[in-house]
Length: 231
Image (cartoon, one colour):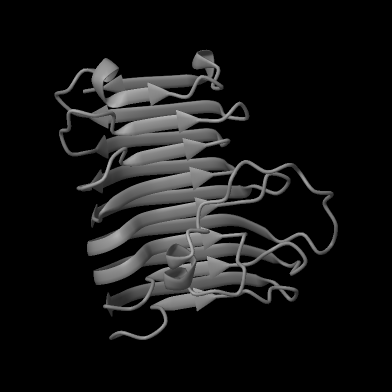
């Protein structure tokens, strides 16, 4: 796919749901966004069984991979221009049939050379993104991984060569397990964990830098809920 709104986009009207969707063996060059799944409160529906593999991307001006449950009718470029991609900590809403749900997502063997953001995962506080599995992801973006309001995120083999730090930001998420995380050397923290709702975060980093130099905890995080190792 050359240029255009996105390589693959799904949503935001999800009332009928999306199940067992497969995307593989694709190249996206200069598309506005790479892989984009979007919805919002009031849209309803369940998005589950998403299988993505063997994707190569080049020169993506916004997000290479984006799952966003705060879609407001704008393109990612417009959201970034208006500074409303990152949602502040919000209170839970009542769960109804109009609450969208994204779960059981598998993404393997993805490369991206050039993007503003590598991976953007944004669930709802009352309905988190559930069961996201990624494997063998190699990207050279400006920003790395942003994960907020997710439960059950497993990433094996994440190579990020970012120019902005921290390279990995986790907010109010639980059961996050990242192994073989390779990040660039930096004199500032490259991993940030935030939010009093964060639980059971395990990160294994391949780096020569000491953990006290590349890892920072927000004061609201219970340190007993976060484990960082390196080799």
